[in-house]
Image (cartoon, rainbow, N blue to C red; front, side, top):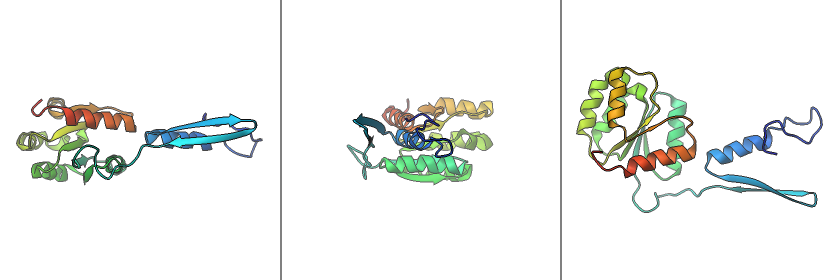
Length: 182
C-alpha cells in the first residue's frame, strides 16, 4: 500500500500517491509507519522520534550551517534545530568565514562551494578556530584542487548524498566525537 500509484479505487478516483508520500515524509523524519489489518478494517500507525529542547546528555551545541543554496541551508537548519542544536546560517563565503572566526561554534556544516572563491582565507581562519570546532563537509562537488585539498585535510566527516536524517545524524555525531586536532 506504500508503493507509488497503488490504489484500490477505480480509474480517475485517485492517483495512489497518498500513502507513498506519507511514507516518505515519515521516513525522512526518522520515523516508522506500518499498517495492520483485521477483518476488513485497517489501522495505520506512525512512530516519530521525539524533539528535544536540549541535546540529550548535555548543553546545546552551536552549529553553523554554511551553504550557498537557500533550500539546502534551510533544510539542514531545520533538521539540526529540531534535534536541539543552536543553529546559525551563513549564506556566502564572507558570512561563513566571519562566523568561524568568531570561534563560538562547535560544528560547521560546510558547502565546499563556499571554499572555492578563497581557499587561502579558509585555511587561515580554520587554523585559528578553537580545537573543539569540527567540520562536516556537505559533499565535495567539482571544486579546485586547492579547495578540495583543504576540505579533505580539515573535515572530520564528508557527507555525500542522499542527505536523509539518519545520514545527517551519523555525520554530526561522528564529527562531534572526533578528538581535537584529529
